[in-house]
Amino acid sequence: MTAIDEIHSALQQHNSGRHAAGVVPRTLVELLANHAPAALSISGAGQTAWNGQVVEAGEGILGLAHWDGTLHLDRECILDPLREMYSRSGLIQSDAMLTRYREALVTMLHEQSHFLGPSGATQEAARQAFKQPGSRALEEGVAEAWAHAHLDDYLTTLGVDQVAPGIDQVRAEPSYQAFVPAVTLLTDDLDERTGLPAGETLRALNRETAEGQWPLVVDLVYCSSGLPECVPPNREPVVRLRLENTLRESFRSLEDFEGHPRGYEAARSKSTARQCIDRLNTEIQTAERYFQAPTRTPDQATALRSALSGLAPPKTPAQSRPTTTAGAEVTNRTRQRIQPTPTPLRGQGDG
Image (cartoon, rainbow, N blue to C red):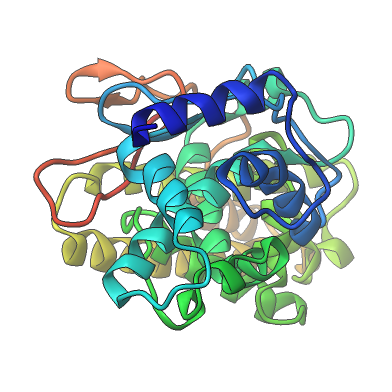
């Protein structure tokens, strides 16, 4: 049987339900059946929206977490390396081969991250939230950063470290360099603000869909500041919305850096995140002074209103502009192959 036939047979067997779930995988079919429960287990999320189906991805796409719950994976870069990995189970292999397997597995984990969410979350609500400014950059950055940070746990849970000895000794660089550095800086900052253990904000965001990610960030920012002690209850929604609009706009701008060299993307991502955090701190301090101030004269009130003018006026988040790749609107969370390149890179579309 050829490699192509083996993959076709594995997909057919998996999608027909003729597979062994709840076991340590020893074949590609068993991996397909068990990879999502492993992602759910290590994440601590309430549910996965994966519908259990896996199909071959279209031309140029490495992976796609479709809104209907179907997982799309590329044959050449994902399915075939994983088939080969199990065919060489237990053998000592080169770092290049191990890195190839690792890239395939981190793609699989990244895509499953998109399906994770709290109990009761819906894909339709997530899809609508994903269209809002800054949502794509946050969700993609979180999925990629979390997948790389927890990949070794994932491999151990699936027994891959026994199938491919040494795979935990090689590393693969994260993709999405326009998003990941900014997400890393923001989540590290939130850990510090709130006194959470390192990496906890990233883990918490990964357990949310796009519907809940930015509200969670705003909640962490707001509650770790002095605002809860001084903002009147009737003004709290306005202050929270202003903070959210500031964060969203900064992360929306990250999309402008996509398609540039990795070093440029990473540098601009970091500088944008630092500016975002600085602006956030300034706005929090200004709001704290405003609401804590004693009775103000008309002139003082006018001066403070002027100081607050940098905060977005109360409004719902603006509708996002269509996100395009190569001139065409992208309607799903799509990881794309960029050719030519020695190691497949992953790009992300809108959903």
